[in-house]
Image (cartoon, rainbow, N blue to C red; front, side):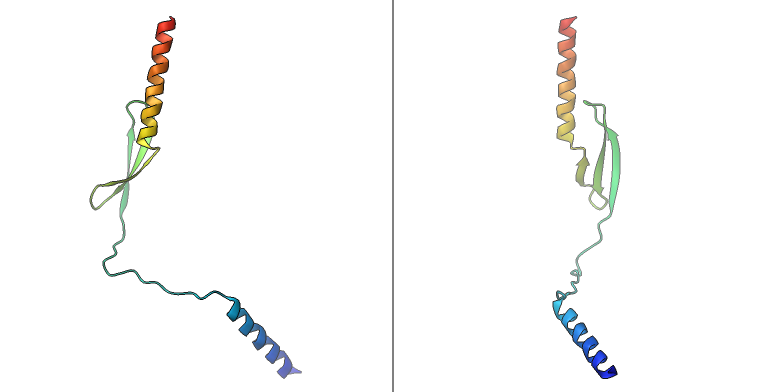
Length: 90
């Protein structure tokens, strides 16, 4: 009885191992470096909203802007146009 249960256990174990996807280890090339990033906070002039710039610390390159500067430019321009419309009504 014990031998049968061991055989069943081993058969289940082998079938589970066959069903698992193969896992491969990947290594980064030697030239790969860790990226150090910093955050810059500033107030956008046109929209008067805060924006965050994600900056690469090595070369001071802007990686991403949150929210996008172009979107804030549009918001600022819309505010300006609405202000002009209100001035003409008065």
